[in-house]
Every structure is written in structure tokens, then in C-alpha cells.
Image (tube, rainbow, N blue to C red; front, side):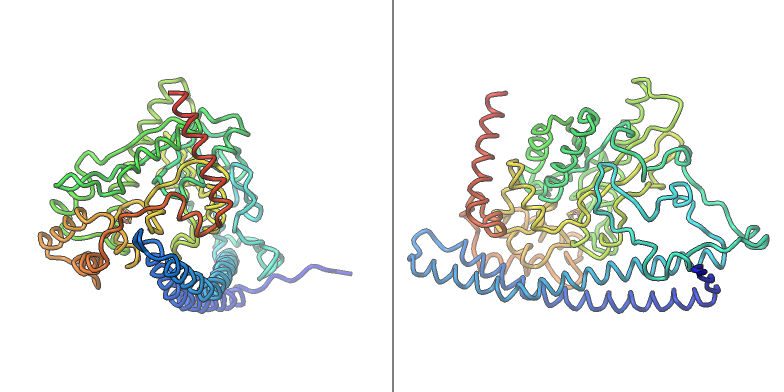
Length: 477
Ligand code: SF4
């Protein structure tokens, strides 16, 4: 029996691609709606949790029990919305993959425009992280449009003439990151913010690097965002020290980089005179990404000096991003050549090893590692990096303001100097007023953030491991 399928026409593939695009938009709208609803109930959990955690020492046990019960009830109410949000998120990821396949199939049929990177690898449908990760989200091309439909028709001479060669960095063509292992890289640069995602990803990378015998090639890089005029650090105090401690725990080299022309505060007050936003994230591009690239140039010089010559230096640049955090991150590939950062001297491959991890899995990994996490989580923060981040939720901003009143005063002053609000629809002055009405957070229980996610026994075990490690560091010092 003849089982071959006739290739679809370009017009049919275009229709399929447009339909897949519409399905993707619908999935995105559903996910946004579910996220909004989930956010409302998450806010209730956070408020209940703050009331419970910040109850004064002398609060009667019965009242404590009541606050704890209120917190549990809020968690129970929140659970189905969280599950619904996750389900719509999974649907969105699948819809994006389907739209991507359909679009590529149409482009192949119409223009013969096959992604050279995939041609080189010949393994687009079977990717894996350099550490052997199997969590890739690249779609199975045998689903959806069907492998036979995706098959490229023979390119006509006209299509061949129209095809423009893509500019690829020198050295990329003889190096296929999809088939490479950690040992194939000259250096592994891990960018650490000191937050929980960075910490879990670092633990995972340390395990993979140990297995590949290349722990000595890992460099942990931290971006210091500087201090305000009144010497208040823009980040949470102790972040750099914690990132260094985490790197030392695994025996990795640690480096801190700063922008030579001034930190985030100086940029805001003297140069940009406008707060960053999700549309204009100059804080990330100027303070983090560009500084990271400068560091890579330094590393290349260093490696050339050590005798690596005759080919571009292979750099694996690792970031602890998670798709759950935003739709932008959800679209990022787990492993890809960073063409903008690559040149004749270096091939830079970006790896996001925990892209598909859940928050629970991150906390579980930290618990098992026994490495200290940042105290700001125990104080009620959900995310780290800048204490007052323009992308943070209102709950996080109020919590940060209660913990950092002096920094909040500086940001209020920045609003006055620049004449702009912190966010288009939110002034830091309002955040300060709300924080002042709630009063400062004075009591921080170690392990509280983990207890909320993993329960008492896991946290007790984790705190024991942290204490053992602390003694180990003291003895070694
Ligand atoms: S934490 Fe927020 S404000 Fe700070 S650099 Fe990142 S996006 Fe910008």
C-alpha cells in the first residue's frame, strides 16, 4: 500500500499558517485572562500571609491560629485559579509551537527559506540542552501539520534566485550547539542575580558540569547595579555577597561587573531622566546585557592568552529564566546561538536550563542543595534583583518599601527630579503611603518562604543543611 502523502500547496499551507496564528492569539488572550484572575487571588494570599507573618510578638495564640487559618483558606481559594492559569499557559506554548511549524512549512513551500541553523544541525526536532537536559519545548514536527506536509518541495530556480543567504557568525557553521556537550565549550558563564531561579539553575549547572568534568570552566557573573546618592544599594543588601557565597559553594570563579559610566540611579537621574518600563527596559540592556558582553570580550582575550587559537572561542552563556514568569520569556528557546553576541572571535550560545521549571521545582531544588537563599524571600518578596523594580507587582513594591524606607524616599525624590512617575499608572509616593500605613516589617523568620511552599519538615531539613554548610565554610576559612 502506498503510504506517501502528497505535499500540500503553498496556498493551503498559508491558510494553515494563518489559522494557527489565530489559534495562537486566542490562546494568548485566554492565558492573559487566566493570569489576571490568578493574580487577584494571589494578591489575597500575599495579604493574608503578610498579616499572619507580621502579627506582633504579643499576639494571642488564638488570634495567630485565626490568621493562619485565613492564610490557608486564601491558599485553597487560590489553588484552582493557579491550576487554570497553568493549563492555559501550556495551551499557549503548544499553540505557539503549532503556529511556528505551520509558518515554517509555508515559508519553505513559498520561498524555500529553510532556517540555516536547522539545516546545519539537522536536529531541530530532537534538541537537548548541552548538559543532557530533556526538557526542551521544541515541537515534534510529526504532529500538527504532519511531517509529510512539512517536507520541503524541490526549490525552483526562481525560488533559488530569491533566497538570500543569512548572515551567520564566523565559526558557527563548524559548531552545532544542539549536538554539543558542556565539554565542547571553552568557558561556561553563569549570570547570577542571586535570586531563587539563578540559585536553582546554578545548582543544576554545577551537577552537569561536575558530570562532564568541566567545573573549572564555570564563571559566575553578577551585575552590580550600584547605589543611590544617599548610598542606598539599588539591589537588596547582601545580594552580591550571597551570589559569591553560592559560587564558592560549588568551587566556581566569581566576578562582579559594574557599568563604568554609573549605576542605575546615576543613569536615571543624570542621563535618562525617565524610569525604565517594560517597553523600554534600558535598565536591563545598559546595566546587565551590555556589561555582560564586555565581560565576554575580556574572557576571550584571557583565553587567547592561554593558547586557545585558530577558531572562535565557544562560550555557553547560562541564565536562570523561567517561562512562567512572562509571555516574553515563554517564547525564548531553551538553547540557541546568540547571533548578535557572536562574532569572528567568539560563538556565544545561550542556555536557559530551567526554562520549563515550575516555581515549586525551583524551591525543591534549593531545599535539596542546602545552599542559603536570599533573606528578602523570607520577608515576603516574590522576586529579587532591584528592590524597587518597575516590573514588580504592587504587593512586592509595598513589601519592598516597608523593608527599605530610605531607598523608597530616594525613589520619591527621583520622581520629583525627573518629573515622571515610577510607572505610568503608579507613583512610588502612593506605594510609600501604603507601606507607611502598614508599618515597617521588623520580624523575618528564617525559612519562612520555603515553609510556605514546601511545608515544615522539608524546611527543617533544609535549615539543617544550611547550618552544616555554614560550619563547613567557617572551618575552611
Ligand atoms: S530588576 Fe527591574 S528595574 Fe532592575 S534591572 Fe531588572 S527590570 Fe530593571
